[in-house]
Image: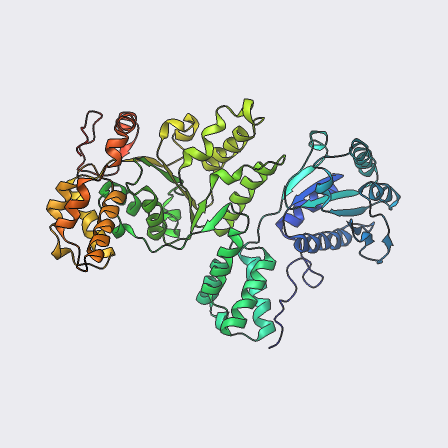
Length: 525
């Protein structure tokens, strides 16, 4: 089978028109900036972009520029002449840069690794070299997959976030694979857009690999294969995962007001909404008792909007290394915006950001900075990323998170009422392959007052085990026997639930119409 290779990507020797980011770098160089820091895991893309930058500068400037690459393995290499300077030490390369002629752009690969716990001599030398470079039209560029800057260099280097490739860049990669392999499947505009949608959020190399793998497996480029590979790539860092879900609003028993709210916004990301002048939906915070369908709602929301569902483990945002937590958040935001339109699901939000209040005395303010960056992004974001957050203990959330403008709405999910419990019983009976006509769902709903949806499911599962053990189908009597010894959460945590209801009254909207929503509501068991 022939090897599938992409044609040169934007920024290569054959396609040397600088991108919008490339033009930004050009302006920094022309303005005399001596130190830049490019944050990106795509080293090859950075190299290609810098080549296009130098080529563009040489077309518009009378005096030519030259480009050098450095790594701790290869030393300092002049990309035009191929000359190698054996400066493998991070301190030696700084001395070598001073010997380079004027108008030299030097890319230092992985140099951020030497700045995590920097040698004072290295810091002093780098500051001196940056000062000298400014007088001789030299630019020193550090590249790394994350931002690592000691306080001494924060004002010396200008940070540039290298965004993940956009649709046009991915389209170029796809076209290159098609030309190389002679594929016609993805040449139709509609099919091509589906493939690009599936690849959004990948680096150019990851996209190229996914396209090639799809061709090897199916002899064409299929969106399903690309989406599968994207799910694996997104999951690598443990921060995000793409959740494949079949849940819809029909999977939820009750919560009619919540469903109505979502359906009213299902076309909020479309062109018609933009033409009408609607602002992009920001997100939804669902609070309430554990087991009442909050997580199920998050999954169903992605189905309503018809977009991918990303799940964020907020606890994993925080790393032990200096700057790692902030870098993790930037990575999450960058990935979500690249995949957009999408839903970003944050389960049990309070566990991720509860420590931001005391952050200054516990972690040097890291939690507070990450939290501040996150809520600022939620407030200002214009990309179609709909945040669905769930919380059990709203008292643990910082007040800033609950302010209007962060979320479009805050909805409270209480214990299911009679009609909702009946609906939940029907859903669970059908879910487990039984006929709801064989059960008295009205009486079952009455018998399970005070139970959450997940508890009702657990009761039915226990009845299934009883029926299996007795070699017969489950019955209403078996369910009643399970309920005799069943202690619901509403009894175990009656005080906490009462407090949550008190907080929610007047602060959050109800998720259902027919609910005896009241701080004084008694919990029947």
